[in-house]
Every structure is written in structure tokens, then in C-alpha cells.
Image 1 (cartoon, helix red, strand yellow):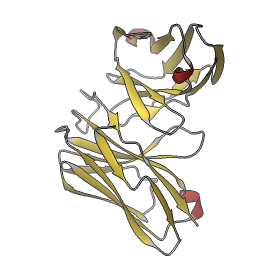
Image 2 (image 1 turned 90 degrees about the horizontal axis):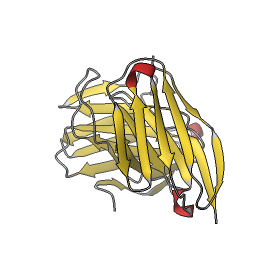
Image 3 (image 1 turned 120 degrees about the vertical axis):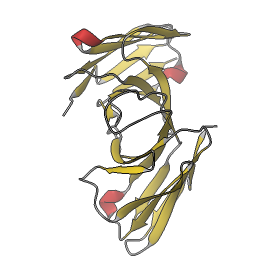
Length: 118
Length: 105
């Protein structure tokens, strides 16, 4: 079992649907992340929430929107997705992060949500 | 941005063999981590190693920050070591393209 819990594990949705992916951690980490991973590719960062501040990968389309209700929860809202958005979506948290490039360690990943858009 | 390159891209080993995986990065970083992704997609953090050497059982890692590379050593490999090994740098975790390892019984 992982200390970062993602639900659901699998999701099939149509292009007109609205769905949400959920991520929860109880390790007291102050930074949480969403990554997207296509088959046979490395994960790519989509969003970072660190100390209640959002950092966005500018290449991520607006049909993905993150929400951080509190420091333990991170949701990813999905709307009007395209088939090419089908991928493994990974949530992670870390013990420390700031918006510079210092002092980050202890990443823990969830087991992912495998999303298929039809 | 920082470039991260891993080699070899693919590796096939017989059970019990040793191997060395390499990660080169193009700029100085103060965060480097090694991950193992199993066939079900779970990413496991193996080492946080911005510099120096660490060991955990059959695995060890060395990072030479001044020369911008890191090495992951796997000794006495087992079939459960199969999967993809990634190095990643920076607080935003820029991943290398990975080394796909298959350990045969």
C-alpha cells in the first residue's frame, strides 16, 4: 500500500463528461503534484501545489483544472477531454518544496489513475 | 531547461547478474532522485541522492554533482527488479527517459 491514495484506479469517460480524480496524503507533506504519463514515456509535471500556491505547466490545456481543498487533498477536475488525454495520471507529495529549486526531497507517488477517453 | 539523459535505454539481464545504470544531467541540481516503476505503474522512490553515495540492500547509488552524473547499481538482480528505472532532477522532477530492465529467471 502507498501512503498517497488515488481514486479511482481506472476511469473510462466520454469526451462530453465531467469527472474528477482524487488524491490524498496523510504524511504532513506541504507539496502535492499531478503528473501525466503516456505509454512508454516518463511522467510529465502538470501542476504543483506548494504551501497553498499553485504552479502550472503552461502546456497543460484548460480542460484540466486542479483544486486543493486542504494540504492533504488534491483533486484534478476533467472536462471535455480528448482521446489523446488517455494516460496514467499520477499524484505525488513531497516533504518540502518551495517555488525555487532548493531543498526538495522525499517524493511519494500514488499508484495512479489509468484514464481512457472514448 | 535542464536535460536529463539515461543509459542504456534497455537492458536484459539473467537473474543474479549485476548492472549499472547511468543518468547525466545538463546543469547543476540540488535534488536528484532514482525511481523504479513496476509493471503496474507504481513509482517507488529508491534514493534521494543529490550527492555522495547511498546503499539500500542490493541497490546503491552514487552522484557526482560536479561532473553532473549519477549511477545506480543493482547487484544480484532478481526478476522482481524488472521495470523501468527513472532518474529525476529538480523540485519539479524533470525525468529522464528511463532504462527499461528485464531480468530473466
